[in-house]
Length: 60
Image 1 (cartoon, rainbow, N blue to C red):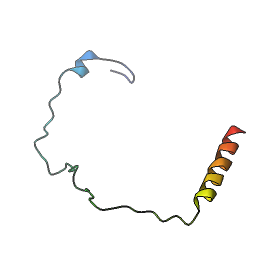
Image 2: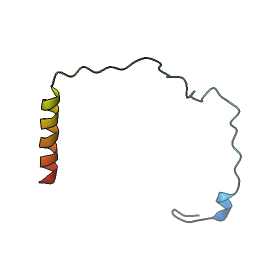
Image 3: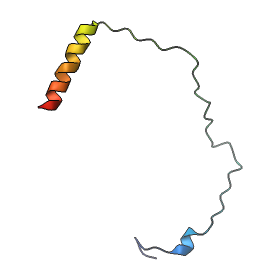
Image 4: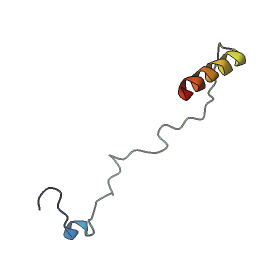
């Protein structure tokens, strides 16, 4: 079959060996039970002003 052609025989059930876990990735490999904190040097008023500036730029 050429590029871009469709052949239903290619869509038949394909067998895949998934019994080898050595190449797999554990979904719990990078679990993190810690805490995340942020320190912001700007005041709430400064952040609100910056947000307003961004919204004004988007509206233009």
